Image (tube, rainbow, N blue to C red):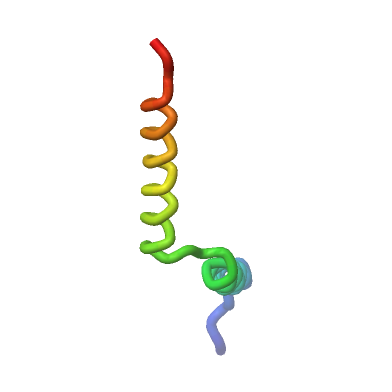
Length: 57
């Protein structure tokens, strides 16, 4: 006689796999490299410094 199969476990495993696959696709589509993030952060910091330097007292 065969063992009973837990269908909920298989359903949840399939859902996890689908979610991981979708996350990987989005990471490729919308993800940014570390260099891009650092460049954007540096640009924002420079803009803030420039603005602070032009304030009147």
